[in-house]
Image (cartoon, rainbow, N blue to C red; front, side, top):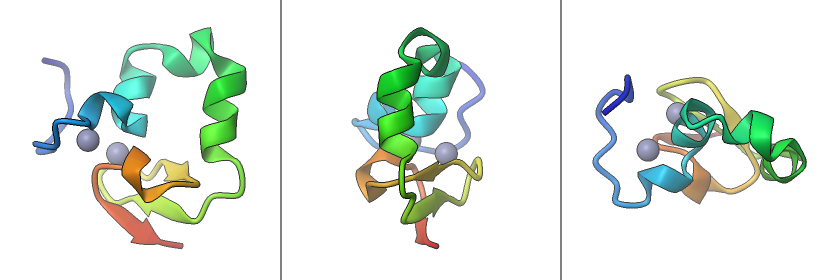
Length: 62
Ligand SMILES: [Zn+2]
Ligand SMILES: [Zn+2]
């Protein structure tokens, strides 16, 4: 469901795109902020940056 493009990963619910879609970034702003602190990767799908590559659908190094 949702507008997530082509991510087939079973951990997609832990990806930034899915977290944002579920409102996690609003409900758990502090936790979400931790995931995006000192970003090392960004998602090629949505452009979101994250510290860990496992939080992104298509991580590319910054
Ligand atoms: Zn993404
Ligand atoms: Zn994903």
